[in-house]
Length: 376
Image 1 (cartoon, helix red, strand yellow):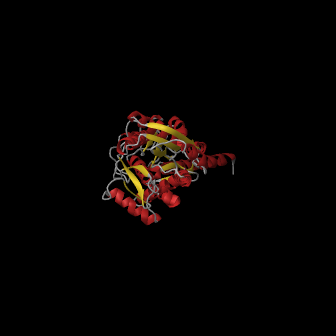
Image 2 (spheres, rainbow, N blue to C red):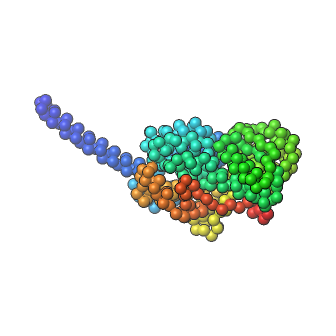
Image 3 (tube, one colour):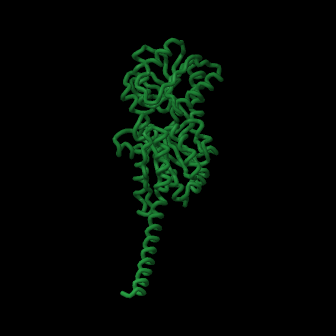
């Protein structure tokens, strides 16, 4: 072949290859438009919530994609934060830089969300948490949202219940020493004191603790009407068992994290009498809630746990934004700010100016090993 012929042939091949690559890139880009990321604690002390959220999310993906064409189906890349802020940051960076993701669901852990927030904001990637509650998240940036209530709300409601409903005047607190536990402890303590009560003792313990006897023993040296116990399921199980072992008999008031079947299963009789706050669920006749509970039970053969419903709703909220043409983090953010009373398994969702939601609460109490609505 003459040099001129080879040149013409090579040019033709190059044009064809460029065209093919462009077509492939465009095809891949269109598929990527419906990809989202997830950073969840799939291992570690918050894993029970991360796994709950993942089950809810997977159920939502299955239901949504069943009626979509292949090009419209939504896919997810899961990353494990290991219940650790440093790991969460690495996971988010990978999703942004390697996978080119524009929206991420996660984390459950408040410390991880606060660590990821600057990165999400700097890259204009929307972060939607189905479980983080620290009050500082409200001001963590314009790309940070959560379909979970702030500790500022729950702590205030808990303080009013303790002081006004139960008539307790002196409280002690035993809390996990991370953003979640510190946030709840701070909000509760401040509001309880503002009402006229007194916090006589406070004990924080490291996340992942397996022996809280020293902290509980120090609490025994003070007199108080009740104990406030915000924490993660594994540590709260330890706390309840060792509280019973050491003979601390005052009432215990806990938080929404307590509303998980795993705690009752593992703590057994040590959980008897514990009172805890939880967002008031929608009516069982609500079609979205009823369908979610039925499908979840049929799929996983267990009742939904903490963050199962908010994980489910988070996927559907993002899908709503994608279905309305949003593709970038900024476009998805605009859709979420305009969202009003989105029907979800956890109840209607409307985000305020801080990306927060607010829902009414009620109190449950463990009686004969089962949670029932507190009538006090």
